[in-house]
Structures are given as C-alpha cells and as structure tokens.
Image (tube, rainbow, N blue to C red):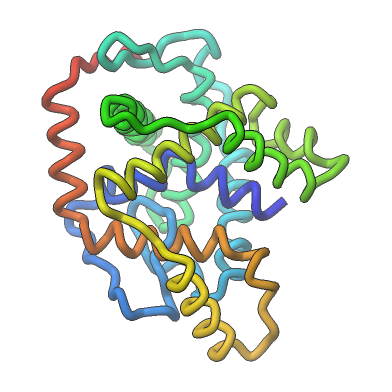
Length: 262
C-alpha cells in the first residue's frame, strides 16, 4: 500500500512544492543524499535518506490526513470550487487533495488548526496543477492511453485483490485515479520539456548505490523503490530551480482568468 500512497502524496504536490511553499525556504543541497527533499510544501528534512524510510513517512502522512479531516472541511463532490480559464475544478478533486495538504503540513510541523489557510493552500495547489495541465497541452504535450494503462496495470498487479480497497480508502474511484495518473504523467512531461527538470536512469542508479552503501540494512530491490528515488531527485532539482519555477507559475497566473468559488 505504501507505493500507491506515495503516488497520492505526489499528486498536485510534486510540481507545485516550490510554487506554493515557504518563500523563505532554503534550497536543498544537491549533493546531500542523507536527507533528500520530500514532498512537503514547507520542509525538506522530514524523511530519512533511505527509500524505505521515505515510503513510511508518506504512508504515515497519508493515513493521518484521511483520518484527521472532518466533514465540515470538505465540500459537495459536484460543487465547483474554482474556475481557471473557464475550466471548473470540482469538489471531488478538492476533497481528494485537501487531506494530503493537511497531512503534509502536519508532518512538516505546521499548525493545522487554521482550516481556512489549509483551504487556500489546497485551492492554490489545484489551481497551479490546472494551469500547468493547460499550459502543457498548449505546448503540445499529451499522454497516450497506453501510458495510463501501463501505469494502472502496475498498481493492479502490485495490490491484486486489495487494489479496489486501496483506492477506496484513498478516496479514489477507478476513473478518478486514471485521471490523476494522466495528470501526473502530463506534469512529468511538462517538468522535463518546459521546466527542464529531468531525472535520468543513471542518476537514479547512482542515488540507490549511494544509499545502499550508507545503509546498515539491505535495501529493497531498485525496481521497488525507483519511483520514490525519482521523486526525491525531482524534488531536489525543483529546489535548485526554485526561482525559475516560481517565475513560470507567476506568469501562468498573471495570464489566466482565475475565480475562486469557496
């Protein structure tokens, strides 16, 4: 279940970590493999350096988020929470992301009593994700159905009979999970093509070998933690390009028609 929870933690937070984070946040050291950047808007040091520890941190954060959200903090599934260039963001998307935002803030040691602030953070995340999705399509970037199916098959194979239960407990249906996979894959292509943030296979292998040398215990096989390592390295590169990413997000916002409805 940890791998799918790691993916859910990435969704919307992966690309906008820098854009929606603390302006005073210091960039991560690109040579630091002991405390790599994680997918929290405010902190880069919450997880340990080893992939297994990162999985456990994401597992804990996601579980905390799902359990610690009241009905009053969520909205009607079919309610529009914002429009971006005429495209509506529905409550169903808001309700999926809100627990993740709240839990990552909590894991980073931030106060979560101010639900209005969490609401605004969630809207910012969703708006930025939609702006990136729209700009990616303007750039001619697409995700093929085969890519979505292949990604989905990975999770179906991993969880077997528990697959439907895992989706339901994470607040997703089969259809909405496919949509999130498509958005995530599109965001990855956008980061590579437009923002120049790309992680190579050699970099992943080098990180894994370094972590294996530093660990006192055997790590899981590379193929089992490859996605987590890629996301850690992606997050580090986001930090390195913090100003460039922020400038791009600001540009997209300035040129967009955005209306927040809650």
